[in-house]
Structure formats: structure tokens, C-alpha cells
Length: 203
Image 1 (tube, rainbow, N blue to C red):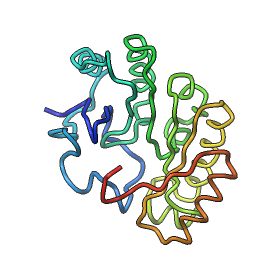
Image 2 (image 1 turned 45 degrees about the vertical axis):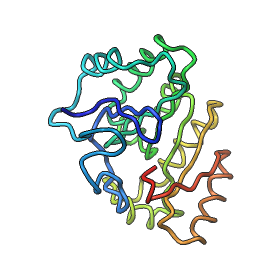
Image 3 (image 1 turned 60 degrees about the vertical axis):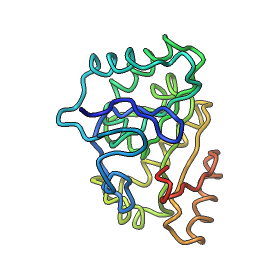
């Protein structure tokens, strides 16, 4: 059975979808069936909200201080279920801090601006920057929106910053140090916090 909720490094994670418009060269899901305490993160069929709700009801959120929408897909590919799930979890535990790990392509995926509706239910937005220009971004992410994706990701990030939420941009430590520093400058120009993620740690 596929895990909808799983733990990794002591944290709680939501796996809502396996869909993703990217096929990143460094993607963690290329390394196995699951990560952390999950047994399997690949869905044979995408979960309905009722199935997600049942998973939430079966999990003890009473003492969970934070949780992350991440999993083996891009969470905004399941935007309706993402928003419904966030609202439902907040109704159970109003003090929980919710974060989304996203590629920032939600506007392209959903065909409309989405930062406002996401920021209304998600406290922390973590966007994968990955590279410093459109050409290199397309090469490393192998996304289905070539040429458009990089600028859309930056625009989504700025929109989230403008909503007043905590916004982070991340790169994985597989790119050269000079590119990491360029990424830092891009991130700071948008008003977001910069984080370098460890590929070996899988987060």
C-alpha cells in the first residue's frame, strides 16, 4: 500500500501525487521506492481527497508541530487536494505549521496565478531554484515547459513573498559553488531565504 503520510528525519510529510512536470537529474525518487519510514511512495492510482482524509484521520497530529507537502510528486499538481488537506489538518491542529516543497511551476501547471490561494493555507513556501538561468534550469530539471519555466518559477516565488509568507529558495549541493552563490543572489533579490539542500541526505 502506498503511503500518503510518512515520516522522514523525525518530520511528517504528505505524499499527495506522483505527477510532476519535471524529471530532475538529481531527483530523490530515482533512488528507490520510498524514503524515510515510508514503505512505498509510488501510487498505482492517484489518491482522492477522501483517501487523503482517511490517512489524516489515522495519523495522530495532536503533537505534530509542523508538516510538509512533498512526497514523490509536485504537490501543486494536486492543488485542490493540497488546499483541502491543508485546511482539514489546520482544523484538527490549528497551531501546526505547514510547508510546501515545490518546483514553483504551479501557475503553469494550473493555468492561472496560484500563489495567493496557496499562501492562504500554507505557512512556509519552499521553492526549488536549482539553477541560475533558463537554459541551465531546463537542462537540469528537464521540465515540460522549456523556456517558460524559469521565469514562471521566479514570478511565483515573488508572488508568495508579496503575500507576506515565509518563502525559501533552495538548490541541491550538486551544482558548482559559483552557481550556488549566483543562486543566493537571485534568491535575495526576490526577498526569499536561501537554503542549500544535501543530495546525500535526500532533503
